[in-house]
Structure formats: structure tokens, C-alpha cells
Image (cartoon, rainbow, N blue to C red):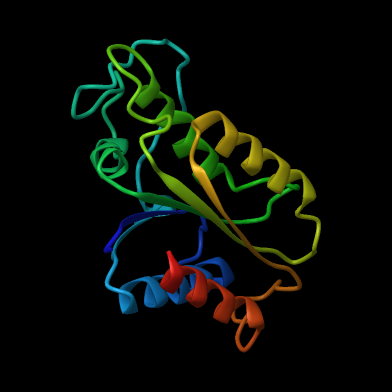
Length: 182
């Protein structure tokens, strides 16, 4: 059965190692007949959460702030799978993706929780210079528990500093295979 997949790409580089994972995943997903929508967060205007608890999940644009999250909310509401893609920065995801994740909270507020549960699934794609993924995987796994999303796993590609370092590495095939088997 065809799935509707949303990718939140938190890399600041469109041709970086994280984006190579995203590209490979997308190719695998499309080859299996899935629909993929990627949001390149570094090219969007997304402001930090104000913590105002003013969101209303049932609105098309549930947050009181009006910025490029208004493009992401409807896509996330209607998707089956959310893929979080990010480089590893200080043992966590990039600021770009963390800001977007924080802002998704508006879908949990107000007149119905449209984020938690609903049969969604998620996967994590990450590239890094080093290999210290333990803390970010712990965060991701806890986030999946909170959201009640099926955790499809992680593709973690360490040892990639410069753009293109990931070329030819097995994680690219793993990302393709994950996309294909969703």
C-alpha cells in the first residue's frame, strides 16, 4: 500500500552527507510507489516556539505564529510517515530540525491532538563526523514513545566530515532499503 511520507531535512547543506541519505531514502521510497514530500528546513523561515499554548490543532495552520511552518502542518497532518533527517551537532539534531519539531507541538494543542498516535511512523537519518549517536537516539526513541508513532529505526552514518564523504558507504544503501520497505 502506498504511503505518504514527509521528510524534515534539518541539514544546512543541500548537497551534504545528510542530504545524500535523504536522496537515497527518497529514491527507495519512490521506487516502491510511495509519495515523498521533503522540506529543506534551512531554506525556510521558521521561528522558535513561544511556549504560549495558543495553538489549535484542528486549524489548517494551528500555531499563532505565521511563518513557513504553515506549509509543514498540513503535510504532517495528512502523512503516514515522518522522516527526521539531520547532521549530528553536539550530540543532538541540528537547530533547524529541533525548531520545527518544537513547533509541531501546536498539533497537540487545543481542540484535538492531531499529532500523537494516528497510526504514524517515523525514521531517523543522520550523518556525522564522529560516531557519538547515543544521546540523539535516546532523545528520538523517547520522542517516538511520546508521540506514539511506530519507530522504523535509524540510519546513522558516522565518519563523514566533508561534503561527499558518505559516497559509496553502506548507509546509503540502508537508507534506500528503508525507503523501499516502508
